[in-house]
Length: 127
Image (cartoon, rainbow, N blue to C red):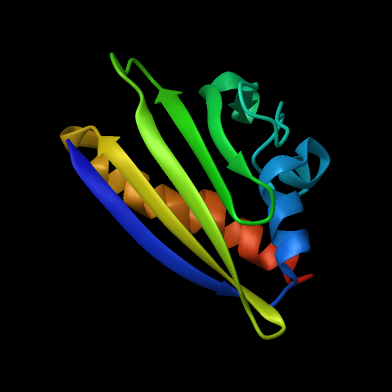
């Protein structure tokens, strides 16, 4: 199992970035839908109509979201942690994705950039 670490500077408020992570309407708008999501611990969520699914295991509103993730035929979950930090008028979003299956590492690392956090950044910035 491997770990993915990525950081993004997003030219948007921390509140707007948070909403892009947890509000199903916003997730649908940047391309992760159909989505079921909120910012409550214990919530079962799904993205891309269930291709990715799991549970919110820790939530600190506007600061940190930790989730158990399942995708494909994974036997055990990955742990995904999003941390948000205010940087002036922008937000630093840090991703820590642990327990990534070795044979899917390259695709998942690229997927974060091209299908998840890249589009989320563009959406939050109004592009």
